[in-house]
Each structure stands twice: as structure tokens, then as C-alpha cells.
Length: 84
Image (cartoon, rainbow, N blue to C red; front, side):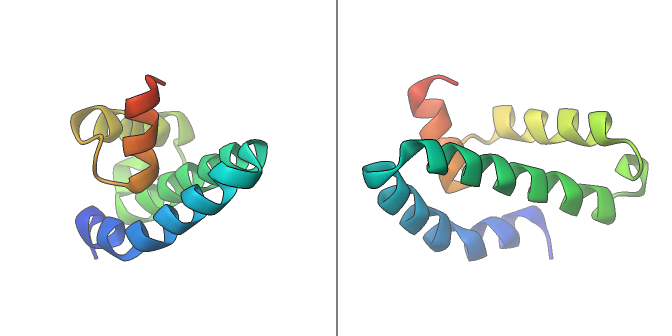
């Protein structure tokens, strides 16, 4: 399973979380989306041998993907719209 497949599977779930938490508790939304990014980083560490045991490199890789494809995950689209 690649990153595109993972994004397709999680997009409806993330949209629902953004709509619900964004309306009622935005502080909880920030924590949930941070957790999702951490899970993506751990996924990349398991998927790519060069990123395993190197969290800083995995985080940099994820940040690069986020800059190149801001619409890949639903919460990245939100961050790009807010300018974060």
C-alpha cells in the first residue's frame, strides 16, 4: 500500500473529524491532526528502510511530501488554506 492508497482510505474519515471537531472543539482537532501526522511518520519509518530509526529524517520527508502535495490528505489541505 502506497501513500496515495493510504490517503484515499483515510480522506473520508479525516473530513468527518475535521467537520465535527472543527465545529465544536478546535483544540481537540489540532491534537488529533498532530496524531495523524505522527502516525504517517511512523508508517514511513516502517515502509522505508532509510527512515527507520531516524525520526528527524522521517519528519523532514513527511514535510517535503506535505509541501509537494498539500491536497493529498484532508488535513493538509486545511493547513495549506490556513497558511500553516
